[in-house]
Amino acid sequence: MKIKYLLVLFFISLFSSCITLSEDNFFFPEDKGDIPIKEKNLIQKLKIKTDDGYILDGILIKNNSKNYLIYFYGNGQSIYESFERLLFLSKEFNLNVICFDYRGYGKSTGKPSFDNLLSDAILIHDYVKNTFKPDKLFIFSQSIGTVPCVVIGSVKKVDGIIMEAPFNNAKEAVPRMTEGLPPPFCWIIKLDVEKRLKEKKPQPDEMIKSFTAPLLIIHGKNDDCFPIDIGEKMYIAAGSEKKKFVILPDTKHDNVDIMKGKAYEEIKMFFKNVYK
Image (cartoon, rainbow, N blue to C red; front, top):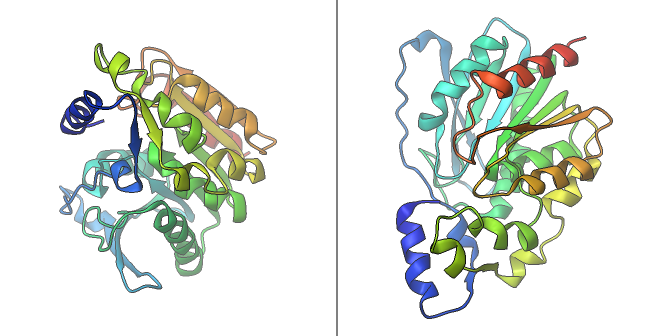
């Protein structure tokens, strides 16, 4: 959660016992679009036009592989800020990695919304399947990337899904987003979510019931946005026969390191098992 946003919530809370968040409060678009490319030959720029006329801007990091991974990053990020991770996943696990900026993020046009995340996720999935015809297709989601991930996993056939710090539903997850804030914010700021979002169907913990692909969920033990039991509830709800929940010690929401340590080892094992 950004400091500026935290301060706004704090001052609002001085005059209200509880803050009700509207949909616009959940998105922090980053407009960085230029990637620090050293290996330009590995990068292919992608664009998709949505049904309502907006442009989703993306990249493909090419590898000598017939297997692909679609990456949905966390809030307040962009392709630019995710690039190091994307490149690592491609090189380390021999994957072609695709990432699109959400509407209003990076160079993508339009305005972000949860409905757009859902519809654009299907558009991205179908584009990848039809354009590149992958032998195997994987999904990696981070935080708010839970939304596009669960809709793909629930209605499309994929070969494996990795979720980092997912949330289960608006009604439970939003009020608990302040539990990890430092005092006095955690005592003063109380959150709720507008009724429309709270009652929106289906929620992520409902969609994940339809998962059939192998699933790995990794969640920081000290997650200060979505507490650890939120991730556990997603794991329990998941319909995947092959699934694993991994707790990362001494890890919060925004400092998960997939390039070394426990997270890396678990991701490495996940791909090893999928390819058996």
